[in-house]
Image (cartoon, rainbow, N blue to C red; front, side, top):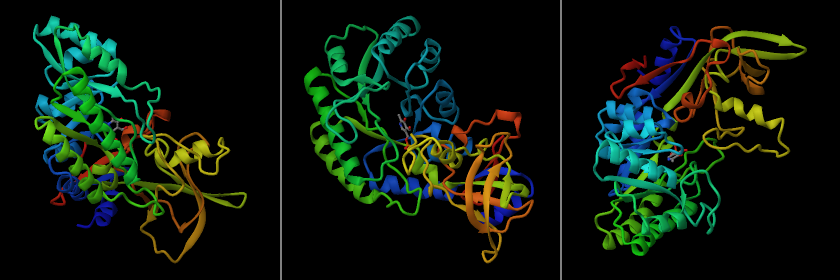
Length: 407
Ligand SMILES: Cc1ncc(COP(=O)(O)O)c(C=O)c1O
């Protein structure tokens, strides 16, 4: 059954829901695997932790980029072994470390954290534990100097630490850098990869350690609005592999890793919500929908920021990136009977608005709106507790067309 037929059917059961299409996820993953042969991939679980989604992605050989103990456990329960789960996040607690040590590769985010892992390793295992460190390098995504960040350890501090390391229960054997996600400029990404290979060489030659892996983080973006040019993944892959082969000539045993969340799932998700009411007020028509700001927050953010911004195009940070054209609103109604309406949610706040004065086919109570680009940082970043409203469901259409519902 085509996805729109499934949506039509399921909207009789649910007033608001996400629907993820596995065939799109598998296609995206195939693109990465074909174009980046020899590079390992991790899926950033925080992007969409739906259990069907993660199982599907892990079944394709991807490991996990886990940002919390909960995500480590999720990946572990989904069947991944320790060598496939990388736990990287700032501010890990002793409990996080104690409970993840046997299930994941830990990436220390600060010098304090290295000491803490060392202490816990000493108490818990009395063995030497291999860890990675997240580095805040002497370059940025767009320039050639380091910038202050809450993430990672500044490059020089990391090098000094490794040279004088007297932590007896850890061995640093990997590095991780992530500076930015959602990049569409291929030259920026190529330059970033180049800087990363140089950094890996530098660290090994200055400190004498052997890196078992370098994790390049993410950056690969997707096209949100029609006026953006999609990234040429084939060309980026070819450039990355060229650098990889040169690097491997010198360091044949170092694994190279890329993390990705949105490229794998961003396009696979649609958000479906129902018209609960329609009304006229002083000449304007409002369509009241179920769960917008509190169901799929990203389309509402433009409204949250635009009134306070002097810029014509308000800026917003990842993972809340949005812009005026980043989401399309589709209906199942005939396209010849358009009316000008504002699309608003049923939450008790006036900022719960996803579109103002747009032309859309006439909508009546019980009709549905379908919003695209709802696979990544969609449900996972949406605050749903305000007013204790019912939460949207999550449906996963697997490659055989079976609809699975997340419990
Ligand atoms: C450390 C890290 N890795 C990977 C990602 C995934 O980024 P994306 O979903 O854009 O691929 C993020 C996202 O913010 C991140 O913070």
